[in-house]
Length: 160
Length: 470
Image 1 (spheres, helix red, strand yellow):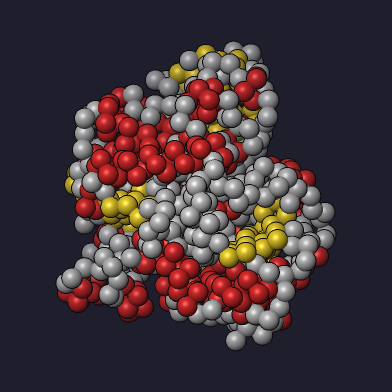
Image 2 (cartoon, chains in turn yellow, blue):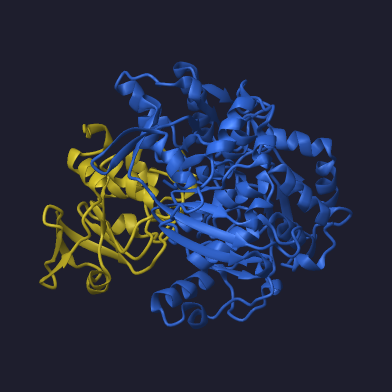
């Protein structure tokens, strides 16, 4: 996966800013996507391109259980969120529907990656290549179950 | 072998356990209108049925209006979501407490009050505050819509086993009417942080937890998710068994159940937790959040912090506080009691049960809401509303100038017409002070029901320990 970075240098990016409550009534995923990140960044939907990555701090996706949050990001074009850590319901929702990859990075990668950097993410090698800075970062391997759900392409395709 | 309460409930629900995954049986599945439509649609597309409609209960709470229920719902998308749930429940044979049911209410309020929530059970719901049910010694997880569909189809949930986290609250609160369960849980989150419980199931223990009533315990477990935990638990005791006796769905062989629960549902002495944290109840005072996550909270006696003092050398924390204070339009150094509020919301699955309303009414009785403040009480369920009205609480609130509304999630998450206007500042008994949570540009301060009531009367925060609440 190759794409460029949209970086939010902050912790605790919650589901209410990823997809504000009033839009939970929307069932059309493309329309949902037009409101992604609206609580934090009104220009996100104008800026985001298919294949982009979000880079953020600790506890990304904290708050509500709304699967609308990873759905809105996914349908905006986001393929992976690279964060220092994730809230667990968001983490699980992201992979259950194969909406996006929640990838845990370490502090040095978080600090090193800049907004608009081009990255190549390879989960088979647990590696991120920063094509802009010509650097390689390690990513934290997925827990066993999560890795299997990702490999299967979502919870409903996963046949143990 | 010594086991924790969590391990006992977990082990007794395992269907399959291998390769880092556990398939757990689900005893109760609670469903609401917002996170279920796509799940039912998924069943339909794959020609699947609901595996155990008899263990599945639905209500509508998130986007229902809290105004006159005899009027049509003006918001067409809300109306559609409500109708969709009705249609889905009918088609799949699920018990629904609809908008006109005397049992309608916030899903986490009605589960316990109807006896659907039982000790030692596993409960899931497409809502993060499902942790509330842990107050009864039930293992209760909030899940997303894909998992909702999975549970509807299989009555099982696939999970990795969480770690165990003991939170011990020692001693007793000094003034239990002024220092509430809300103040205990906010104090905990403040100390361990919004990710302090990530990947764990918390068991709350200690004298200050045992002495809480069931409704107060629900307030504690409710906000476990605000510390990032998968669930919160409190071991059941005689208060639990008494509370659940004789409710609508209490099992017929209740005495037998209780005997079984008494014997099994406790953490064995000598059982090890993966993590522990201890707090003394004696030092807890009324709490007020000033920032944009629940850990950004202070004692009512404190001042709005300075970013460097709060961050203690951590630049990320400092930045977070600066940004939060900017959003909240607060100046560092301002006494918490000088913060002027515009709105008051007494409601939500955290604090809208009968005891919450009784306690708040003591502050309000015979007084008036300050004229520029708009204050509302949204009971957690129709049953709470009815019981409160039988006690005359509605009259106390209305006489003081509060709006007395129908039950639902209301202004906790701003999905129905009950929202803050841009820039409005609210003393709220809800659980999240995230940016825009109660309405775009709205500013939320999380407090207890008595603190919210006192703020309504005074127009700013006051230390409720100075009031006579007995």
